[in-house]
Image (cartoon, rainbow, N blue to C red; front, top):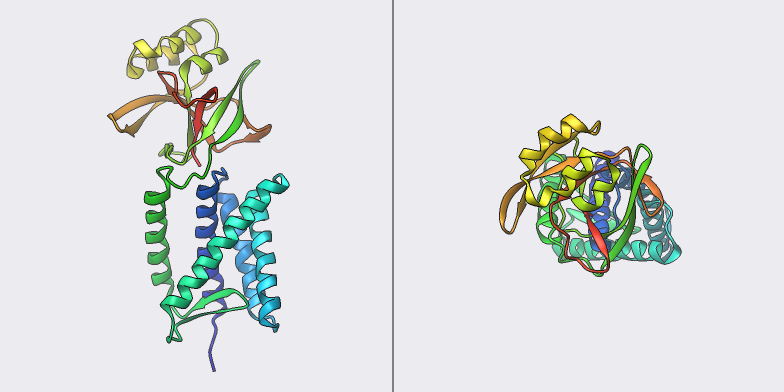
Length: 284
């Protein structure tokens, strides 16, 4: 008789679902905060526990597992157009099936791990789960975080508001943009300084328009004196080496008509050569 621990079942599926949602976001180029991904993973883990103990046939169990995948994706990514939501669900389900196949391959002839109604359970400690999840997460960042898994070019319509002024532009979703503010943890959207300059007036606008000919460290103090908006410096690593960029947080950021709060704006001194009339890069 096999003994199943509910806490192990929950936390294992919580970790797995979070990892699968993270990979889904990276593969599809869909931006979503880590909090929403964690909430989706928690919902998926609760449904997995319920489904695991539900007496049902293999076929019905698989169908119900597909339904829990859809609910998990909907919770994590929210309402999307039907085609986009189908793409997200399909990617998440495909990754789930790949994981299931890997479990069967690794545990063949071993009773240490198995699937029931499409739900993963393994007799492993929380320490092993934590280490395994961390390693897998870091590997996924190395493999998918450089933009290799981006299946297509995805653009977003961005609007920045600062008091009574606003700017609008298109931004490319790029999994190679890994910029984050080390203090707040917010993602940094990279935008050409000439575009953002229109948010300001007088000396502030002129200073940002001259960023290509000046050093960010040199402009920082002047911007702080003439602008109410707080600017600071962020170190970035590029193929040409390490440098500093100016970063600030507008009053409001809108992406595809929806307000978002998890982004900051980093200023590029040169035009971003990414085509399709895009003037910014959004990390995924």
